[in-house]
Image (cartoon, rainbow, N blue to C red):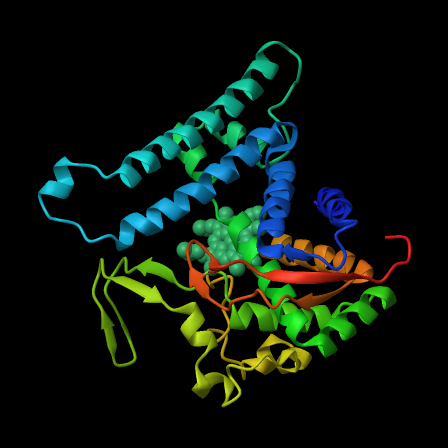
Length: 334
Ligand code: HEM
């Protein structure tokens, strides 16, 4: 994945050339970057189709959020669909068609002998599972489409953007990270990324359904009950983190996560925990470190006066009005 990340970040930085001293909206820049990286790594040769899917997913997530919070009149809302609902159905069908078109193309390549396998990328693995000779392991077309709906783009987009924001405010940490990039260490970057994941956890919460009734201490959880695990609230709990819980203090993580959480493994769970935790954790943190290192090597970043702080949870925790920063070139030829 590293070559895909480096190529994509280089393309982004090429676009930034000549914009020094001007305002850049990094949340949008990183949206394009993370879609590009994931499209290249997950969909390989079909990466343009992949980018189209991520575009549609972003639009769909906004519509789903709007539909969820809209007041509805019982009975009537069952018979009459709003414009947002119709649009979201159209987008969901668009995503389905796009994925199945990519699957068809891979199948055709094998059928015509142009290729002897469906591909080694994420899509190739899915098409293999779609054709699995063992029916119990075989994925349905719906499963294949669902797997492509993963939220790896929005979350990494969110992490990168919030990390740049905190570094524009805490310039001492920006300087430490830059120095370390040049010295090829990543201790400070690790602390900065963890502290950003704590303060601005991209997934504000996860939901789990209780399979079998269970008692945990004084609490009884009946079967089929849905439990919301509020990641963001746990990360902002003074009892777990101390009175400076709302402050950006990457040094909390200087002795590792176990030490920062006082050996309470559920206190810091940006990637969830247990068997269904995030499979893209290393992918996301590696991408963030590479992008951050490449940016900090070339630019000092400061916050634009236009920035308004308004985080809100959509699929991932987003800055409602974007994150506007100013770039100051550190290289004479940039
Ligand atoms: C900073 C970035 C990321 C964060 C904070 C994050 C966080 C999470 C969380 C909290 C879950 C559990 C969701 C739930 O149970 O409802 C999850 C699941 C998942 N994530 Fe990520 N994620 C990130 C990036 C990625 C990336 C880049 C990929 C793919 C390349 C990815 C792929 C997945 C998949 C496939 C699952 C489902 C795992 C399963 O159900 O077994 N994530 N992620």
